[in-house]
Amino acid sequence: MVQEDFSRDIVTLTEFVIRNQKDFPYAKGDLTRLLGDIAVAAKIVTREVRKAGLVNILGEFGTTNIQGESQKKLDVYANEQFIAAMKHGGVVAGVASEENDNVVVFEDRDCAESNYVVCIDPLDGSSNIDVNVSIGTIFSVYRTITQKGPCTMQDFLQPGTEQVAAGYIIYGSSTMLVYTTGHGVNGFTLDPSIGVFCLSHPDLKTPEKGQIYSVNEGNFNYFSKDIQEYIHYCQGTANDFGKSYSCRYIGSLVADFHRNLIKGGIYMYPSTEADPKGKLRLLYECNPLAFIVEQAGGKASTGFERIMEIKPEKLHQRVPYFVGSIRMVEKAEELLRHSLSK
Ligand code: AHG
Ligand code: MN
Ligand code: MN
Image (cartoon, rainbow, N blue to C red):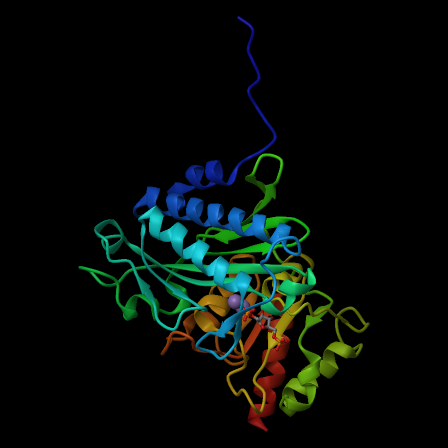
């Protein structure tokens, strides 16, 4: 008998998640389902993003979210798509979203009895939507603590160390989905010809150090002296490479993070005089990317403490954020601590 060769050179996201269910000790099928639902919503958002400019999806929606930020049409659309996907999937008990004042609790039986809650930034990089620059989605999955009935606030206010999965989608020159369940980081690129996410970046590791720093330098005068000192360090030559780092700042956290994850670098959104807690949100921006970066060998810190060990006090809590290559984040922490001890 002729032995046929059934091998092929792609591994789909679905195949990969099922194959790695062993990494996920409880309710195995549920996480597979959840990641599948997120992937479908990501494809729907990709479809709209790719048509932006041709259809009526650019511009303001005409409302503001609880944080006083004006909502774009795509913010609202992405929020609806991701929440709908999770509600229909039936394996999520509730969602905390940047775009909603309060948590969305799914009360029908399937959902209420499910084991997971999700925190999500449905559309990250809103200011870049209208100008054809990369945007993203960030998500974080926790196991519910509430034993009976619908989920409650305590399920969402867990430290990042309790995340069971986290990921992001980047709508860039291609659409990618990158996720971790605490066993390394894997990246999948959407093949538009078949509409399937395919493994393209297996076991992603971030360089220990890089030559990129990412910060909104327009805020320089509002940063503390020690942050200014760290930026001067980045601009100087007293580093391992003997030359200044390059400054790269897109203004979409997902895109800046993704580039630095691959190339090596540090992203920072420090506190300013006006915003002592910085700008970025702990639950649906900082924690998920912290989980991913740590799994890739990097670090995420407020400058003084590990992001994932912060016990959240409220849903839309903000924290100063330093994330990226481990040696670079450590250097920033060193300067901040040094100035504290002066
Ligand atoms: P979002 O669009 O979800 O509100 O997030 C915007 C965030 C983040 O993506 C980005 O890095 C940062 O805001 C940019 O802020 P500045 O314009 O203040 O630099
Ligand atoms: Mn965001
Ligand atoms: Mn957003």
